[in-house]
Image (cartoon, rainbow, N blue to C red; front, top):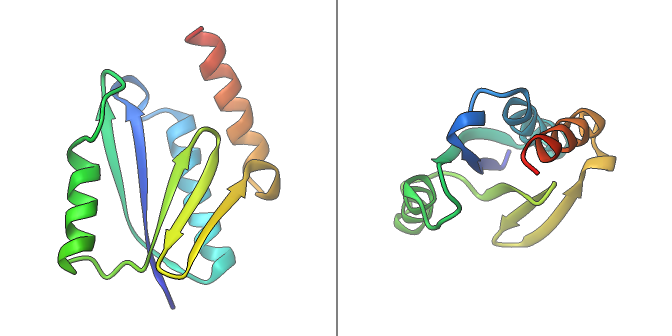
Length: 115
């Protein structure tokens, strides 16, 4: 069974929001579909849009140093999941997921509230 880690860059004020929880659930759903084990989710909790942040640097360093047993990384980016691994780069779109409608709804609400 492949091991996966997730990465999310999230604003501090929505860290505990339904949207953030659904994004993590989406990572779990992808892992279940692909028979992978989600071993950790790294989250950069930010107040402004700058990079790289602490969690992303830690994730990359642990992968580089071989301290992480993860073989793939799942990143939520611009309303879709991006999967990176040594043998694959893939995209998973919301409409292809069971929780896709709920995530899309929360993204829409979030974007309206922050327009």
